[in-house]
Image 1 (tube, helix red, strand yellow):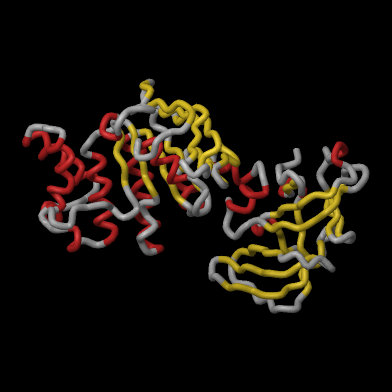
Image 2 (image 1 turned 60 degrees about the vertical axis):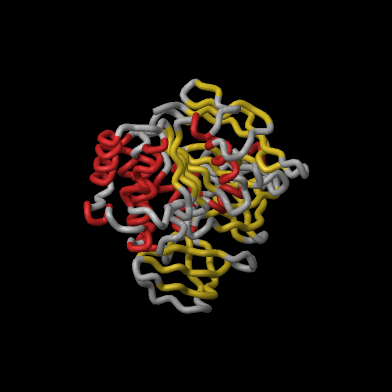
Length: 361
C-alpha cells in the first residue's frame, strides 16, 4: 500500500490541446478516491498518467514516496482494471489471472497460491477457473479482471469505468463488491466514473473534474451539502438540483424569485450580498408539500413521474418559467395543472454568483 501524491500535474498534447490544467491532491494510504465528471473532462487521462500510460507534461507524481514520473507502468507497482476487462480470449480464467505473475518470473507454487486466494475472495469456483472468458457472464468477467489485479498484490488499484458495460442491476451488485473488496484489502485506489451515484457510494473522497480543471475535492457529503460551484451542484445529486434566477433583497434577509416569491435566508442572512443578482439552487428532495403553511410558495404542476418509492413532480413557481422538480416520498395522486403549496427551508438554499458560477457564502 502507498500514498499517491500529484503536485501541479498538467497534460498538454503536441497539438496544443490542454487536457489537464494543474491537479494537486494527496491520496492517503488505503484511501478510495473517485475521479468523477462528464465525458471528455480529463478523468481517464489523469488516471492513465498515474498508471504511466500517458506522459506528464508538468508536475510531479509520486507513489509510496517514489518519484515515478519517468518510470514505466511495470515499475510503478500498480494494477489497473479496464472498462472492457482486457482479458485474453484464448486463455482460461486461471491463465488470465496467472499470466502477469508468470511474466514476473514467480514460482509456479506461488502463482497457484495467489490465484486460488484471489479466486476465493471473488467467489470464483474451480470450475469457472477452467473456462474461457466468453463462457462467463459480464459480472464474472469483471471479477476475473479484478482478480488479475489482486494477484499482483499492488500498492495501488486503478479502475477505469469498470462497471459501464454492465446492466443496471449488475452494476449495483458489482459496486457493492468493489467497495467491500477495497475495504477488506485496504489498498489505495483511484476510480474513474461518469456516474455520480457510483461516485457518491464508492469514494471516501470525490474529485469533480470539468474540462481538465478540478471543480471541487471533498467527501461525498461535503459535495452534496456545500457544492463549490454551479457545475458541482448540478452534477452531484439525482435528480439534479433545481436552478433559477433570483435576487437577494437590500438587507440580505430574503431571496426573491421572479420578483414575487420571497424565501427567507435564515437568521444570519447575507447582508454583504444585499441587492445582488444570484442563481438560486434547491435540491428536489428539499422541497416539501405543506398544505396551509404560511411560508409555502405556490407551484404550478406541468408533469408528474410516478417511480413507486418516489414521485417526481415537475412545474414552476408563480410567473417563473424555470423548470422545477420536487421529489416526494411514495405514490402521490397529483395531476398536471394543479397548484401545490411548496415550502423551502432556509438551510437548504444554495446561492451562486451568475458570473463566476462559484458558491456565495
